[in-house]
Length: 264
Image 1: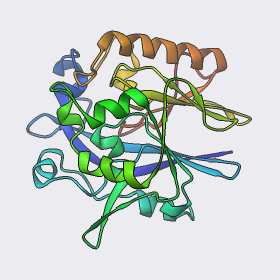
Image 2 (image 1 turned 180 degrees about the vertical axis):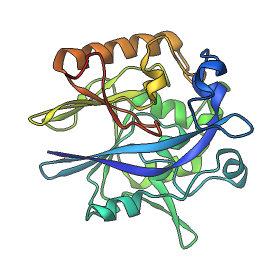
Image 3 (image 1 turned 180 degrees about the horizontal axis):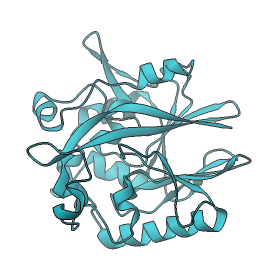
Image 4 (image 1 turned 90 degrees about the vertical axis):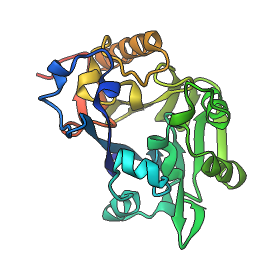
């Protein structure tokens, strides 16, 4: 098995919303913010080469944002094809896309606009998503509508992709599994890698940055703070028991950290 970080780009979001109850006096000077106190975030994806499978966690923002969304989030150009090419791969080589959740900055890259036409970015991949997450994305309520603002793209995924809707814990390969924890979104799942090279967790937006590694620090974007709190403690306990590593999907400076234990 080999693991690679895929830099899918960066974008800006409201710092206060991202940091939740944590006051600006604590994080404001440490993070890259603009005059509107928007925080720059990376889009860090994980590429897993496991046997004959090439697995990507999440898909970034993509290139299908509306003009209004472009002004709000100021995303950099969609970078997944170029990042894969640097490793000798193409988007058609991806066999599986595991979606931690379906917020636009994680699932927007599933569909790309090429020559004015919407096409699947990963046409040969199985797309893995939790049932409750898919249902919310298809028919979001008032609390969640802004986060799932790309229903036209999901329609293409539903019609043309190899869509694998699962409910709870599921084994993707002998070395890769997913577990539904909720918290940040109703059907948020984490990706667990248990292999000869080590034990790793890609936690998506349950722990997006180092600042969110404390269980008590939750984002205002989390739909259930209590679930997020317990999910972080659970992830921390898993990694501490195995001396495993956590991948951070939005941190600007750190990609992989020991979580729940200290390296010697």
